Image (cartoon, rainbow, N blue to C red):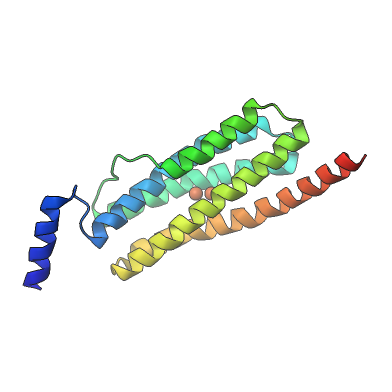
Length: 181
Ligand SMILES: [Fe+2]
Ligand SMILES: [Fe+2]
C-alpha cells in the first residue's frame, strides 16, 4: 500500500494532476457535463431548423431530458463532494460544427431533416458510449449511488436514440421516394 502511495506521488510530479482512477473519472464526468451543455444548444438549433413535426417534437422532448441530465450530473458531483472541472468536450464541439455546417448549406427541407436526425442519432451514440464508460468506472470505484444516477441518463439516451432512429428511417424512406419521382 505504501509503495502505491509513493508511486502515485512520484507520478504526480511528472504529470499535470490526473494521476488516479478517480481523477480520470472526475475528468470524464466534467467532460460529459460540458457535452450535455453543447447538446442543449444543438437541440435548440435543430428545433428551429427542422420541418418534420415528429422530429421537432422528439427534439423538444429530448431538450427537456437533456436539461435534466445536467441536474443529474450536478447531483453526482454533489454526491462526490466535488465541483466539475472547467473543461470543454471537444467531441461534442465537433458534432456541433457538423450541425452548423449542415444548416449553413441550406439543403432542401427534407434533406436537412434527415441530416439533423442522423446527426442527432450520432450524438446519442456519443453520449451512450460516454455514460456506459462512466457507469462502469463509478461501479469500479465503489461509487454506487453515482453509478445509479449515471445509469438514469444512460437509459434516457438509449431511449432517445431508438426514437431518433425510427424518425431517421422514416425520413430516409421519404427522401428516397422523393428522389425517385
Ligand atoms: Fe444527454
Ligand atoms: Fe442525448
